[in-house]
Image (cartoon, rainbow, N blue to C red):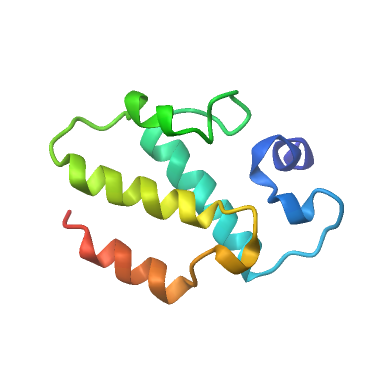
Length: 100
């Protein structure tokens, strides 16, 4: 069920007690999905939000610097404080800086 998934990692700390969705909560969810893509782990796994996740990156290390940039962006998006999360323009700029 979608609500169960939200409780198990997709729901930002602010929404655990409320259901007030916002741009900040969407950015948090983007960060969670980006971390999933980078690591192949689900947000309910115990070390999902730790620095050791990069050891399990699912991409081949063709360009480790780009992977690190994506990881940093994802972690910024997952900040527990909404005011510390980047805005969408910053996210788009950082994604464009990473060469395909």
